[in-house]
Length: 287
Image (cartoon, rainbow, N blue to C red; front, side, top):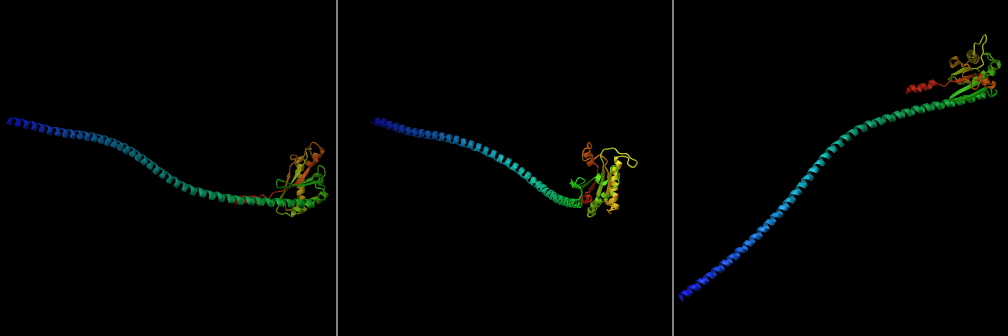
């Protein structure tokens, strides 16, 4: 009986021991599973952290690249700013020079404009004076045949053409008495303009001439011009320093010498009222 009790006690002890061991095993197994789960979680967390680290590294790399790019842009902008400042300084200097150049140009233009106005004014006065002279000459000679005297203005110069038949006998160079009265009327007008100089030109046709007193048409044209000049000076008191005499022979015809009418037109004495060039020269010297 005692032995049975001992057996029962041992069985109970073994059962208890087995129960205790099973509980420990289960507890240990549970702990192991938890540890394993924790390891898995740690590994996942580690992998997640590594991935996040890689992302941060990539982001940091991108940010560094952006910073480097911004630095380059800043350096480029700084260089451009320096260039712009230099350009502005140059432009400031150029603008100053240009302004001075423009100012000088305007002053020059103003001077030229004043000069041109002066010339235009002088030309206008001359043209007005020429028209007045022409009207006075035509008024003084209105009783003479228009075919024998022609008064005109060409290129600002007054011309008085007097036919040779009104002044001279054929082939002669002495002024006829009736012609002296015509020259007297012209001299009266010319004396009213004492500042005007003039030239007397003799013109002939192309018919050759040779006499004891006249060598050729050159000689005849000169002698006729000087004959008129002497009458204007000696008879009508025109100052000799105002007069010039010239012979043009047959070489500046008004018409063809192939017919009688043309030759008659070419035989003439021309009085040219000379432009007062000294007034224009004075204007030019001033500038």
